[in-house]
Amino acid sequence: MSRKVPASPKEESKQPEWIDTVPPKVKGIFISAVKAHSAGNYDEAIALYSMALNLLPDDNVLLGNLGVALRAQGKFKAAEACYRRALAVKADSPGSWSNLGNVLRRMGKLKEAVACHRRAIELDRKFIDAYYNLGLVLQDIGKLDESIRLFNHCLKFKPDDDRINWDKSLALLAKGDFVNGFELYEYRWKREELVPRHFRQPLWDGSPLNGKRIFIYSEQGFGDTLNFCRYLPLVAEAGGKVIFDCQPELVSLLEGMDGIEEIVSGGEKLPEFDVQTPLISLPRILKHDIKSIPRDCPYLTAPAQAGFPIHVPEGTKFKVGIVWAGKPTHKNDHNRSVSIENFLPFAEIPGVTLYSLQKGPESKQREELSCGVLVRDLGNGCEDFADTAKVMGQLDLIITVDTSVAHLAGALNIPVWVAIPYNPDWRWMRKRKDSPWYPSMILFRQRKPGDWSIVFNSMLAALKQKLKS
Image (cartoon, rainbow, N blue to C red; front, side, top):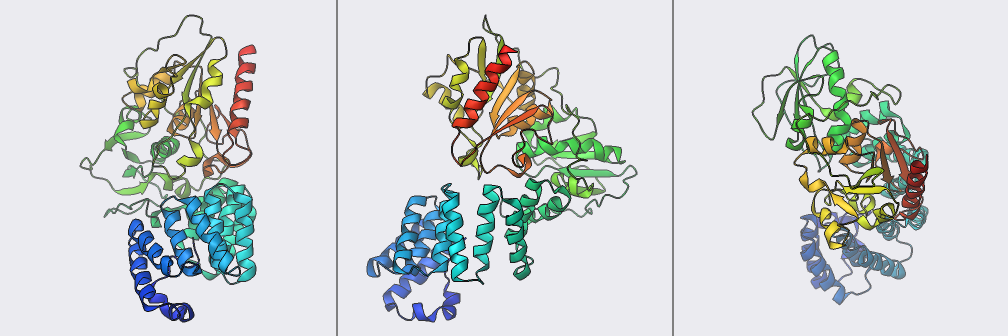
């Protein structure tokens, strides 16, 4: 996040020295650019900033704003060039240093990003966003205690800032402080990614339910629903009659789950209920710490009528299901997804048969990269998660990147190895090879951003050893 995001006509009084020195034509173009930028019309904003820079090619304010717009479009190299030119013009600009740090972070150059944010703070000790941005990078690196200290420093000045409280929650959760982490995790409802649902019935506060009907609804991705549906039986044990609202693709898998009285999906008319809660608020309501989260697996079972029998080639000794990519629209997909080619060394082992469980557009890689003989397709035959669960139960091991399949395998208590990026989702925590959520899971972690070689070499060695034993 830049120091000014972006500079606005309403803020002209704060920077009269700059705005009063530019030619009137540049001022007019700049104001139009900011309006387009603020409205999210990045193409128009970039065109206008570029027009202004044709008149003032070395203006650090214009260069900085152009960099912010380019970064929003994912044009990181161009954004970096803008920030570096701005710093060449004005080396003591804390905003330019912090902006450069932000784009370097997105490019995986974390140590360089840290240096940039520290330089911004040296230049302006009151630059709160620089402390916040530094906290984000240190969180990426795994220095969670230091990042939390920086977030706390920022909260002294901005106690109700949604961004800071949200990112502090992620750091606390990654550290294993579930009690405080889930408390702040409620700030997720302040983010654009989630739209709160409003009901006349009150939120459940954890008080005895005594037979009340409680409406619990999924709120994020498939993996989140699979991860946290483990809490539904606990709500039933607390005396609640659970009505659960989940994604249509999960209905046939979850409708037979213990603790669910009724399941609805896809905008169906809701039955009557007395209290309600979002699914991922349950750990906070039940006040669970890392030692008390429910870990008994399996807590899901594939329906008997689901799926289909897989074909096992003659000579197969070990059947491995693989998934190489998550949903492309996921904000962290650039870090977690890989190519099918990363898995091909497993196909070199005699007796190992690979099966693709991949869904979505990335499943085309199997044919595009001529992997059809080496990796047999199962994913396209699965209509929903119940089918996938039944198919997975016929395999010996699942190897996947961080996707919903990892959660499904864990919930079914099927052996699963997960390739974890350097900066992982909070629930995989840091350093540990096991998962507090799933006893059947082993985590293989990147040692530096973007480098999957050690991860897949380690899994290859572990697979060979497993076959020997």
